[in-house]
Amino acid sequence: MAAHPAPGGPDPALFANLLCDWCVEPQAGQQVLVSSTSLAAPLLLELQRALLERGAWPLLRIGLPGQEEGFWAAAREAHVDGFAPLGLTEVEGADCSIGIQAPDNTRALTGVPPDRLARAARARRPLREARMRRRWCATLWPTPALAQQASMSLGDFSSFVRRALFLDREDPVAAWRELGRFQAGLVERLSQADELRLEAAGTDLHLRVGGRTWINSDGRRNMPSGEVFTGPHERSATGRVSFTVPASPGGVEVSGVQLELRDGEVVEARAEHGEDYLRQILATDDGARRLGELGVGTNFGIDRPVGSILLDEKIGGTVHVALGRSYPETGGVNESAVHWDLICDLREGGRLTADGEVVQEDGSFR
Image (cartoon, rainbow, N blue to C red; front, side):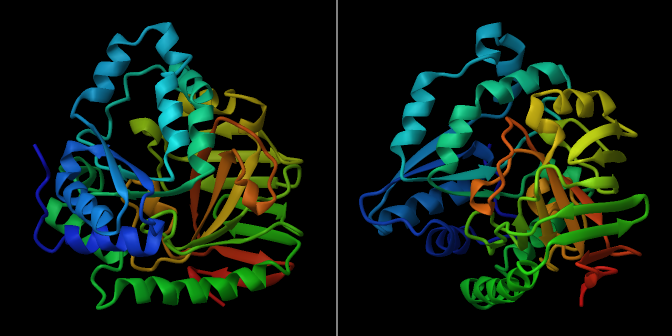
């Protein structure tokens, strides 16, 4: 059954127009691959309308409630260690893609052994690489499962998402353009730095970014967005870092993560919950033990973690790092089947400095 728009939540028509006019900007005749679940039906139908009005071809790929659990319950070894060739053909044939998270159960994969998930991630790497070579956008639609994960009512969570998307503004596109200008200034400032230092409770991490490219993530790829990010030098991260915001990759709860790094590599790793999963991820491949990304959150419309990394990593006043794959456009060269974002909250006693100059302290930019 479709998740009908909750009162105060995102207007599906406005949301679809934002995705088209700001995020993917489809041209007439282009093929746009759209993937989600049936719970996002209100947005999917409006997105189909918006793409058709712009002369593009919408290719809707809709999953069903329970589909993921059913796949993993019946999957044979060949399904874990491979993928359907037609899936790659479709991704390579599309001009761009839009992925809409709309789960019916955020803990659907809790019972799947972490090593099987890691094997599947390695096997499906060609699919991810092909998708990322084209225009893409990741977003979400409020569902009861996401609201429950956030410990909020569906109405409150839907209103939260609406604010995060800037759909509560008179002109959402103008609001994203304004944030983009602020972030452009931040990019210019950070591009001059060689060494960054991240300090907070349980955290004192040094890493080098000199010569790397900072990306202004202003909603074109992630919606909502609100971050600037780069790829740190692969052998530079040294120190310790604690992540106070829980992560739930694939529905597996992982919290209280603490890492110690030396010469860019994780040498010690602990977690209060989900430590087995953490260790399995680190063992995925050689690149999984190094940092592929450092990001700085700037979206103050997102003021609390809700258990979705798409939202949580953008919280204004936080910094996140990713284990695994670098984004090539940053100049990073780390290769991995993994890209796992982990968030360090600086809003209470934390600080980010660039070559000794304070950039962000206690969640505010200086």
